[in-house]
Every structure is written in C-alpha cells, then in structure tokens.
Length: 421
Ligand code: HAM
Image (cartoon, protein in one colour):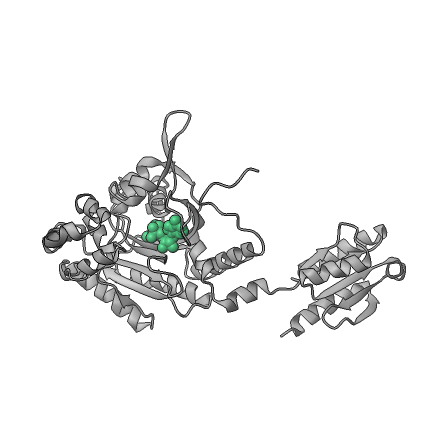
C-alpha cells in the first residue's frame, strides 16, 4: 500500500463539507467588505521567503520544503501566503490600480514541522491582506473582518491577543535592553533560547518552556520601549476596536515567528486548544513590499489555520453543515432510469439534495441503504409507477407512503424540506 506523506492529511467526506462551508463563509464575509480572492502559485522562488519571511526565522532555517528543479533553480513550496501576495503586488503592478488592495486567499501551505495535534506539514490557511493603507483604521478593518468571520461561524470563546512590536528602528534598543535584563539568567534559558540569543533574540519571548517563560515574564514589555509613532498607532487601533465592541486582550510579550512585522501584531487563541495552538496570526508589515524591491506600500493582514479552526468549530455550525438529509430516488426497473434522473435534475435545481440509486439494489436493499444514509425520504419508481406516470413517496421517519403524479414530487419534497424544524 502506498501511504500519504507524513504530516499530510486526506480530508474525507463528510468532513470536507465543513471545509467547504467554512470557506464559503469566509468568501461571504470578506467579499462583503470588498476583499477579493487572489490565487497564487504554491511554488515560489526560495529567495522570496528568505528575504520576505526572514533568514533567521524557524520557517526559513528549518521548515521549508526546498528543492532544485531540473534547471537548477531553488524552489520552495510556500510556507505562508503574505510574501507571495507582496511578490504579486510588485510583479503584477497592483500599485497602478485604485487602492487600497483588499485581497484574500485560501489554500495549502507547507512547513516541515514536528507533528503533533493541530500541526501538519501541509495545512490550509485562509488569509486576508490589506495593502496600501497605513492608518490605524486599516488595522481596525482587518480585525473587524477577522472578528465577523469568526462570529459568523458561531465562535464566542476565541480571544484576540494584541501587541505592539514597535518600528524596526526601535528593535535594536529593545533587544539590547532585553539581553541586558536576561543576561544574569542566560545560562538558565533552554538550549533553543540560548541559540536564539544571537540569531533571533525576540523569539526568546515566545518560548513555551516554563522556566524560560518565568524568566521572560520579568522583562520590560516591548511596548514600553517603542517610538511615539508606533505607540499612538497601536493605541488608536485598540481604541477603534473598543469603539465597535470587539474585545482584545493585551499580550505585552507576544511576538511573531516571521520577521516582517512591525507595530500591530495579533493572534487568536482558543481555550479549547492547548498552549501554543494558535488559530490565527497576523499583523502590520509596512516594509515588506519595499524590502522585496517594490514601492513603499504598507500592509496588514492575517492568516487563519484552517485545520485548527475546523478542529474547534462550534457544534451548532457543525450540525448545520453535517445535518442535512438527502432524498433517495430508487429506480427499480431500467425504464425508471430516465424519470429518476429527470426528477433528480428538478430537485437539484430547487436545492434539494438527492442520491439516485445506480447499483441495481432491490426495493428492500434500497430502503436499507436510504436509512443508512440518513435520508429523509425515498422516491420509489417501480413498474407500476412508471406505467401510471407516478412515483411512490415514502417518508422515512414516519414510514408512511403515498403514490403521487411524477410532476408533483419535487414540490412535495421542497415543502417537506421547509417544514422540518
Ligand atoms: P503564521 O502565524 O505563521 O502566520 O500562520 C498563521 C496560522 O497558520 C497559525 O496561527 C496556525 O493556525 C496556522 N499554522 C501555521 N503552521 C501550521 C501547521 N504546521 N499546521 C497547522 N496549522 C498551522 C502567517 O503565516 C502569516 N502569513 C500571517 C499573516 C498574513 N500576516 C500578515 N498577513
């Protein structure tokens, strides 16, 4: 047997219905706010992520699926979507269009990570980016889009964590101070953190090892060291969110695993998932496009981990999506095939979900199959019905049945569909 690659998943029905329903909701909410879909390659030049995500990040140093193609070019399966959006913005001249650009994307990302619950090597992301607006209002709108999407799915227990990373100019000052404060306990930090000391010291703030967390919790938060511009910006974002009733929790030591962020950064966590299982991450990246050789265009966005989101979906949403019940059509003789498919066609156009029996089951076996499927009704087309131009409509919950003219069947089923609680 050939098995799937470790860390990848087969999303089977009916779970695949949840994915489609979640994505439909994202399209509806984001589309309503003027965001349009951008579909980008999964394969990009490796350099895009080295320069975009950052040379010292975990993603670039140890998690990328990188290979050389037949012409010796280094390519990488995208580990995230923002760098690709920035590349497309530059390459496709999106700056020439009336701005700002409101974009979203849905698709697979790839990271060679250690596997655990909620962590895969191929995972889905639903991402959104607003390019060309540097105001705090832009940040508020992006967080509104995120909040409305999660609310539409019925979430009420997710927490948005917010922090201020300051401007890149603030960082050397902050890092110097952090190292000064941590120096006396440097030897007590975990091996990873001691390695991060030179390569990516900000990430020490993000360590999940309890001993490191205790040490870090005593350090000065970055927000206390940032420039006035960054402080005013993030306070305005917090104020703007408060004004529209979107709750956020300040997380003074929140940092992100990608280098392009400045000022506003945020994550969404679920109390249902353990520590570190973040559902969504995002923030502002005003230098990314120019760092990649494009114009000075600011940006802000987020990406939701779809696998993790689906893992904690509210039961009411799951039930709504998974609880639909089809109607089965049982053609019992060859002459019944054409009327069966004709009925199916009419029912589908009315939004009634149908399953036509095509394996040649008898009436008894067909009804058994219908029950297993959880069907609400069966339309039986036997020789008598065909001769009379009728069908037998059987209610599978009540066990009652009646013979009706074929032409009335779709209407009858549409009505009973709406009569359900
Ligand atoms: P990120 O925090 O690296 O940010 O990823 C966003 C989300 O993707 C995470 O919060 C998590 O839910 C999900 N995710 C990441 N790695 C995995 C994995 N191995 N398995 C399952 N889910 C995972 C970004 O990717 C940024 N591009 C977000 C962004 C957009 N920032 C601005 N715009």
